[in-house]
Image (cartoon, rainbow, N blue to C red; front, side, top):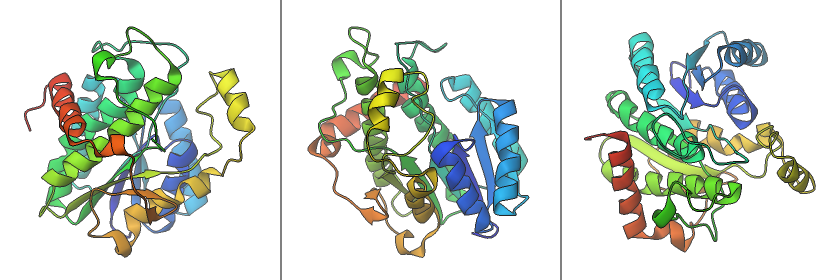
Length: 276
């Protein structure tokens, strides 16, 4: 990974931070994308110390805001001019429904749509520096469906539906973008990191208690598949697949529905105002 530039959203904590440390140890220049300057700056120093690599930087971004995403992309391109690996890792669990400045349900905006926009705005850099890789941190998704009739969950909000459809959305996005990236030298794959000990549920006590009763793995273990997909020569030409424990894994029937894949892509393009 020496001389490779890696951008990781949510790289200041949990799986993202462990991924940053792992790739920095391999010699990559790692940029963590975070909405808090204070938390991000502290994480940068911790990652530098843990990896013995001083090439770790901070990019400020708030994924719920499309303007913030666009500003961050402009900042990134001005500072680096190159990108070899993009890891869409950040995510939120929100106990109640909130709406962003763009009028988007906040979980959908942060976990999915912000990453959709970020990825497409960085595609030119990724293509120019191919072979390059895009990695989407998703989840198990059996039984999960995207509610196209109430995508913003105005009629009924639940944290499980909100988060679930964003993680499934990242898998659908991976499959559709993979088709469009053939012959470009850019690959995209998604993954399930496992049930990881993180602070994501700090604002939802009942979920925190429930998940505390389940066997969970460390952030370092959870980061292993992201690191593998970012660095291993074994997956250099693998595209559009879903991984768990560093192994290709079948996706559910809902993740293989071609009409849903195309429908979500078209909705996402409209919501972000893209013409790519």
